[in-house]
Image (cartoon, rainbow, N blue to C red; front, side, top):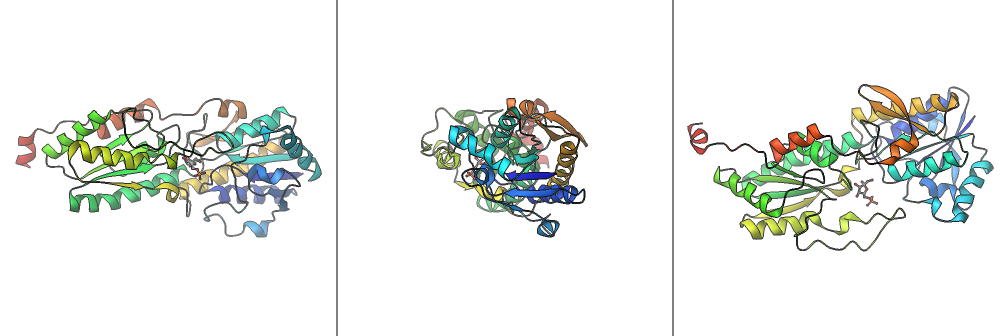
Length: 358
Ligand code: F6P
């Protein structure tokens, strides 16, 4: 068989481990793997592709980014590009395509399946918000970066008695904020699934100061909205899928300024940005990527299409692509409640006399 592979959307640590697994599994069964460059852009126009051999994936399991390149390209936007994708798949003689990506890339994959192409997807996004899977490639690494950053920020916040507002990725959901924030011991976590008002945030900080806790780490997901927050910029650019550039809003910065004005506590903002997507993947991301890549090749050989391997508990399950892209997967209620208790309005009051006795 001739298998096409591509990586689309934002890059994520672990993509190369998935590419390696596909190439190793497919090649040892006699298949040829054709890698399309830069996501769906590699299937538009003349197309841009090359055969990916076993020797090309040697030593890439721990490499961040993607050796295939990526882009945010939606080929469904025009009749011309739709036709070019289908023509290029024929021209390169592709029997089945394995696109690796988040909700956007997988919705294009779902369209291709409906158009009669054999497609098996692989779930990837640091945002971890693809429905039907417990884990997306890149999420564990992003969370580790957040945790490490919070450990570092704690010492400087503590030394200066400051509030640190840490903006993390998460367009529609608070996965990175919640799990990274919990792992790093954030004092307040603000995310779409658990909104606090500016007044509640101010009161929470004042309560902490009253207890003698003068360093505070506030983690905020980049996609959160505060209706009364001044200074959030209008994002002027959208990508091919119509998503606004959240980094242009400056939510962390605006929140830091608002906190300082409201409470008088010295506050700094840190935007972790693409640090969360860069560098070497964790063992967890490498392993899921390897399992997904291996399973995807098996599914293709079994003649399956319009599906993707997903993480279910400790194992790999298989679900339809259309279910995976039908909704985004928010943070589950038990984690939201944990955040509420440990890093939200539910933080228990510690009576001062108890604190003094200690
Ligand atoms: O891929 C998802 C994501 O990481 C979002 O969390 C973030 O808003 C966006 O990508 C950033 O995209 P870009 O790399 O295009 O700036």
